[in-house]
Length: 286
Picture 1 (cartoon, one colour):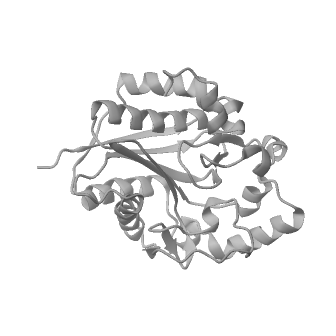
Picture 2: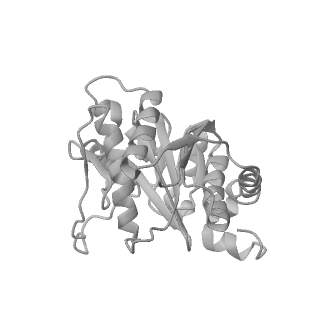
């Protein structure tokens, strides 16, 4: 019989701690082979999270974020900007597959199937996006927002992206986390980004055709607890495992608190970028 998975719902937390705990779960799983974990969580205040490689000082209007009470944090994963607010956020930490199917897209596919099952159980007609040919060079620059474009095996509904996910792989384990918005404020998202007025308005209008939130598609209102329960059931069914409620281990909390203080609350990490942050850290810091 396959080993169970751990299920944790950590509720709303500060942006820095949310990212620190996701990384800590990956690091400890990699080192000590803890149980695979499905974590559900939310945000204490609206937060703009940036992909690992994004240039915050060039792409983000930091003054606008501050004026609107929006926190800025850099994720340990890739991708583009996401505005977290009225949403369910999930994270999955699991070992790399032993059957040779360990490509990035294979994890997106398997986790995507679980996400799709969850939303379909709430009467939302979602589909997994298939690989597409990249657009030719010289076309309009891509949007800096995550939900503006579908990646392979991400979810769409009515032709619009409805879940934004990103991934980080270690040697023996993988972290994937993502945003499932119940409602979406497109104007507010693009106000956070450093854009000309003309380009901002263009992207906002485009966003109504490319981005979606659960309660813009669902035939009846969907609540946070309903999505959380659907995720737990769908991951259990898709991966053929029992999800057992278990606490975060003391070593995971300690590492998360360390990463929160030394990494995810610092301008060096959040604004200057991963490369600069690494140059300034002792070798022992994860």
